[in-house]
Length: 379
Image 1 (cartoon, rainbow, N blue to C red):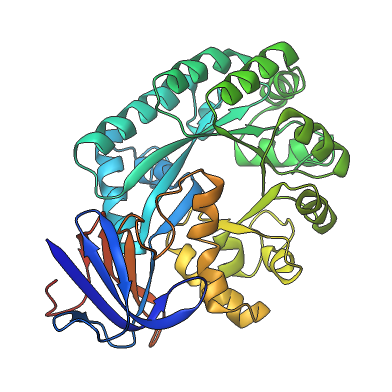
Image 2: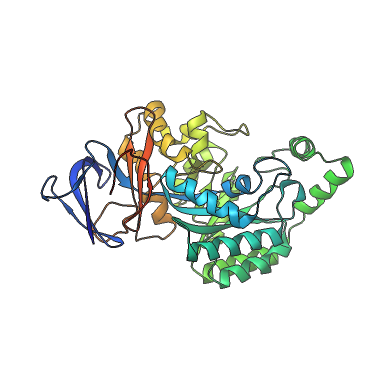
């Protein structure tokens, strides 16, 4: 079956141009001159863009537990979030699943494994968008190494990131800042707090290196998290890290890019005008050209809004902004079959109406409509 979408604003090679997009089966068959085809779905001047590719989001945690101690089954949460993703225009999602023993944050190794298994099972059977896994390894949780290797061996993980939330680096520049955050946020007494500190400051380097080597053997992209200094980046570069997520300093981001390490920031940071944890504003990195892509972090609907917010706050071309949530993250995740409106690519396509607040009004995954928000419209 052939479907032809027509618009005056089709994103091709980082430029919006008039075109007819010819879809056959799961793929884009060709791009025709605007109006060439006698029969087409004419979307007027609505924007046609690739589906959004989100490399890091823990939104599944809020879907499982939207309020403290109000939990829903993982199976239901995965299915319901999938529907919301299609409405947000996210056609490829990497769920950031944390491997750490943190009861206060509702994270554990067993829970991580059960979430990964459910995501993969549901993705194979019934989900609308591609739901993949980004395994987040807390460096102090050496007991997580073998479980992570096991899910990697089963093909259940596509990205791996290294997290270090120990006192004295990253988000916590001092022991006092660490105590203040963990003590108040997780309601820990002094004894509980000291146990957390002891755990996070004792790392098994042999096991860490073992996991990194295993990740490389399986050709998975390796990411770092909350990088705060050039020295740390040099060490990570030697380990094979390819992406620095949420660098905490402009100079660190500049250095990462100069060394060929990609940098990613959170779309909510852009939309809200700053970091919820008081770190650097992502727009500052955008202005300096050292934020290469955006992820949703915890709020998938921010991805589209951030594209327009970057235009407003940094005068970044809309087409370039779209590339930061589509083609660029797809390339970093080694997903060569998507992220662009181009012949031979997957027909993962969104239609955006930006007359008022920008919104996704149509989402196609592999050529099929999985969300239609245009009243009275049939594909």
